Length: 241
Image 1: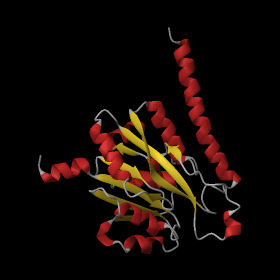
Image 2: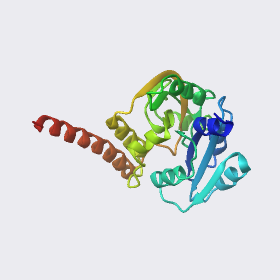
Image 3: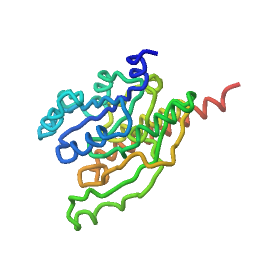
Image 4: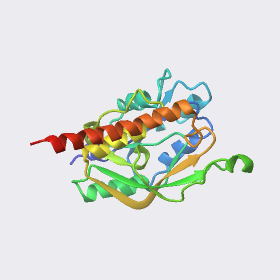
């Protein structure tokens, strides 16, 4: 196999979208660039930020692929970024979170070890953002030291398998990843859950730890849609001859 062909087969495209994420964006990007695995391409799509996020992303030059677009929401931004991905493996990172250094290496190894797998998940560790004053940090829910993660951030998936499930919802403000993960589960993709922590989720005052009611409604809609699809399948199965 030629070197270029091997690189294409092993290339991991990491999709990151950002909207006004200047405080944490650099740390997120660095957590990808410092992975113990290569080759990786980092695709950062700026979804209409009006803070310093575009300047931070552009400062990396050719180390990342940086795209800007008008504000459209997380689902549409992720879908747009996917159009720039060239790897046969896909990973996703929220711009306020971090990959652990060996996330990609561990998950690629699992996919290479078992060619029947289409997606590999791992555990997630939550942490309170360290710059928060103590009185603010106390108002957040307690971080979970370890949880099995089945959202896009905790997975590595074969690109062709991702598209079996389909693109992200563009109608939800919250629950975009939950909605996609529910559809992936319903699709029955062969998967493995690694026992290692692969993802660090930041708790701070502007993430999902403190959601406005209007956004909570979108989150609940994603949950309800998944339940409705499950009930529909069960009803069809029970009524089938």
